[in-house]
Structure formats: C-alpha cells, structure tokens
Image 1 (tube, rainbow, N blue to C red):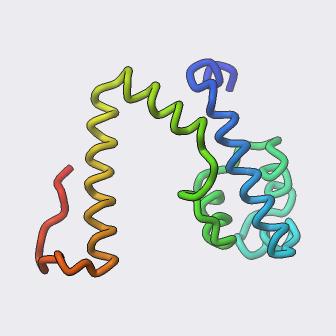
Image 2: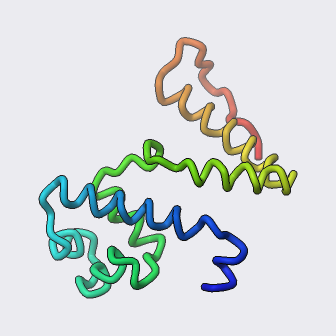
Length: 128
C-alpha cells in the first residue's frame, strides 16, 4: 500500500471521500451498519472495517453498497480527482485518448437514454 500511495498520492483522499459518502448516506437513511451488511450480503465485521477504512473495500461490495444506498457518485466533491486526472492526462497521451473515447460513449448513451429528437434508430455507438 505504501508503494501505491507513492504512485497515487491523492488516492487516499479520494478513497476517504467515497467512504464518507457511504457513511453519510447510511446515516441519512437511518440504516445501521448491520442492516447495510445484511442487505448487501457482506459479513457485518467486514463491512464495519470497510466503513472505518481499516480494510480495503472490494470493488464488487463497494458497488453493491453504493447502488443500495442510491449514492450518485457523479455529484460528489472530487476536486482532488479532477486535479489528479489532469496530472495523468498531461503526462499520458494514451490515457487522455481513452478518456475521450469514454466521454464519447457516455455522450452517446446520454443522448439515447434521454430520447433526444436527434436520435437516429440504429446509429452505432462511437467505436473504441
């Protein structure tokens, strides 16, 4: 983990932001850790450790909890994430290209989900 912190110095701050969003959402809904753990099929002892940051939250379990709590990850305050992505994109052209492709895919999906009048049935999504 120390080597990871050296490579990604802001990842700990991002992780804490994500954990805080889970705790706040759980408390806002008046759910206990035990209730979340049961609903998301996670051992209570593990869930408690995840929430406190004492144990890494496996991505599959993290996604289950986020979906169950209906947390909108796109509206979290991620100033550090934006700064971090800028560093990555400035230093890695292929990463920047990947982000542009992902953005094109998201724009395509957003347009089709919203039922925009510009929709053309059968229009293929942007290629990867």
